[in-house]
Amino acid sequence: MSSLRTLVRERRPEMVTAFLSDVRDMVVPGRTERHGPLPPLLISMTLVTGLVDAFSYLVLGHVFVANMTGNVVFLGFALAGAPGFSIAASVVAMATFALGAMLGGRLGARHREHRGRLHSSAAAAQAVFVAAGVILAIASGGAPPAGYRYALIVVLGIAMGIQNAAARAIAVPDLTTTVLTLTLTGIAADGPLAGGGGSKAGRRLIPIATMLAGALLGAVLIRHGLGYTPLVIALVTITAGAIASRLLGRADPAWVK
Figure 1: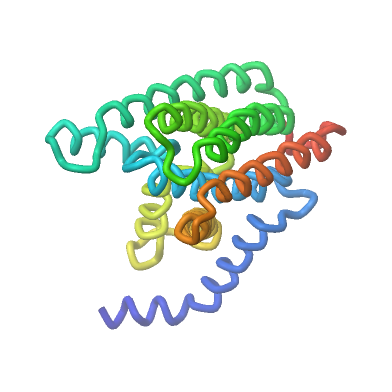
Figure 2: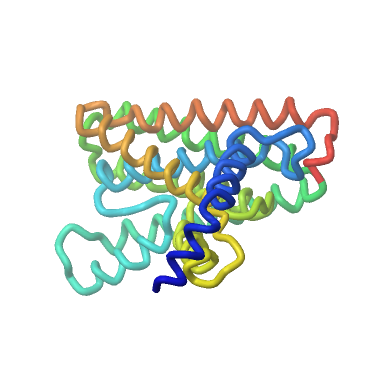
């Protein structure tokens, strides 16, 4: 244990420098960075995940539209008869997410050679479905009845499926925009305490903190009676990202490849 503490103490300045460098490269990438502006764009999509899942879980009942692992678990709870969980809601969320992922996969195949166009096209398509969600949320009032509830699950599930498929095709390491389990595993398993070469904690903590911020913001807004506001913020974020990637990738810079 003492030798481990000594190792950490000796490497502390190096670890702090690497951490700050990772954070900088993720949030404000340089012109020569391999992925260009894609990391901050995907971070913004991670914020959208927190916002949208806060809305779906707190307003639409115990269901996620972005995190399908949770829905599989919820489906098990519902099948066991646990109160507050719906078989139909979980199944609809997973089915529509898969449909959105298929649409996102088609966009990925069409723009395989240009990640800028892939992001802008996917974000534009996602924005259409989130906009439909905003309209439905406003029309349904504070507590959506069953018809509105399932319509919202459908449009938001498709939107988040598109996002996940696009993020997968864009393929920036540690930025899936949704799944954080492997990110947390990487921080612990790749660090010096585990005998690894480096945990890349800076770049890996950014998406965790961003999703937490999105969920926190969404929950606060909903608790204060602004139920549809998280979707409005998500829509603005997605639209701004689509415009940014469209403009920044227009000259075919190296990062689009």
